[in-house]
Image 1 (tube, rainbow, N blue to C red):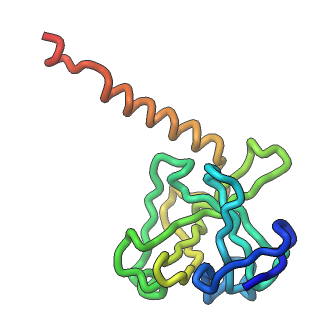
Image 2: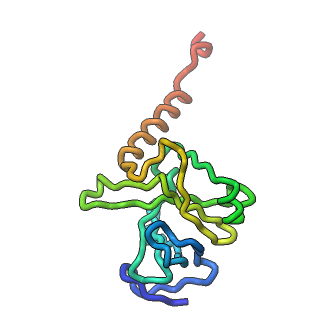
Image 3: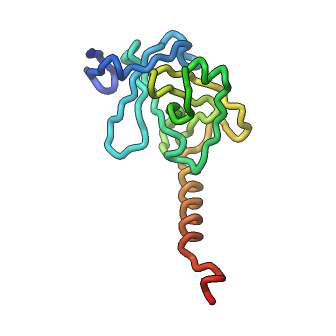
Amino acid sequence: MKFITARFGEIEVSKEEIIVFPEGLFGFKSYHQYVILNTQDRSPFRWLQSFDDGDLAFVIIEPLNFMFSYDLEVSDEEASFLGLVKPEDAAIYTIITIPENTMNMTANLQGPLVINAKTRIGRQIISNNSHHSVKVRVMDEIAKREAKLKEIENSHNSPRKEDQG
């Protein structure tokens, strides 16, 4: 199926690529069908493009692409709504807000998108984790993630006291 978008012109998607958000997204309850577009190789950012309105699209990212950890509890009711049987069937994204200075971009960790990768049903949920905010600075989290990964790498590469004799 072909449709026209404001950002990408005419694109073609198969019916299997469409993700349905039966309740819409917060602030966009009338829009239910979306596709995820990957416009740049190797970029962790994607576009959640509305199939209902070619002018509506959101920049999204998987939290673990910029954070060291992201603990999200999906309630039994939410899992049932999405038809999730196994946690690994869930794809989790956060919506990114990009201001004029892109170094100040933020992610909405409190309202993540949870998508059943098998059924293509999605829901924007509210995280009850007090560490999740609506405006988490992505670049700050990337720096923390890199520091943590470097710390782990150094701890694996440093000789242990018992190995030193």
